[in-house]
Length: 105
Length: 146
Image (cartoon, rainbow over all chains, first blue to last red; front, top):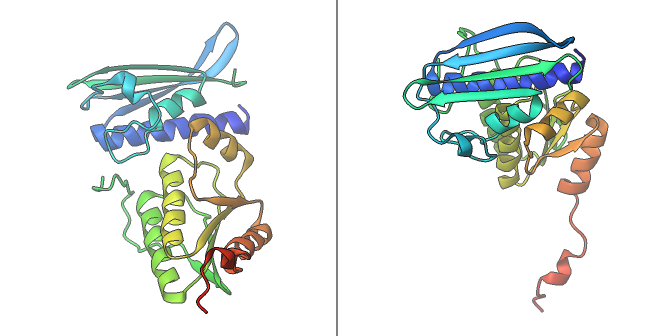
């Protein structure tokens, strides 16, 4: 994976880890190499049992923050990587899965 | 480990500080280590008090060694720029790595009030132009007392 793609992936991960630590305090991150249809990539799963996200649609908008952040973590991470999925239940926790392919596409 | 301001720190026992160098009317900061959160916040405070003590007109922040700039770091840079502006000084960030620039744009971070320059020489030129020379033509707007 070239430098630009590494930078995007790591920056996205940094945003999501920060969210876990700020909101949920603890969580779990799983890193895997995946291969789908001869495409290779890195899959990161960010899972916590924290407060969850009340308004997911708002949280995915730029500038929205329920904390003291700038509100770019979630929408920014989504833009930086190839595949992004998020699932959250208020009171139970949040799971975010990122996949970034080796060639960035 | 999680502070009220959202900062996160490793367990540290030594008092680490980023050195602030003086270059005439300017301050130079080179970030060469992983900037963890308390270190970044200390830098903000140190820069503001150094401007106050020295009357510095500008800050050059060399980020050529940073391969990751996330929204927290982006906010530190914006904060430094805003605070120094309030104290009549400018901030120029120099040496941004291309991968960082590309990532910042996609992340959606606009570093408000942060000027950028390719390197320290150009950064100093920019500071000299923008923040130390009087703006010509301003006198036209000010009523003259005779």
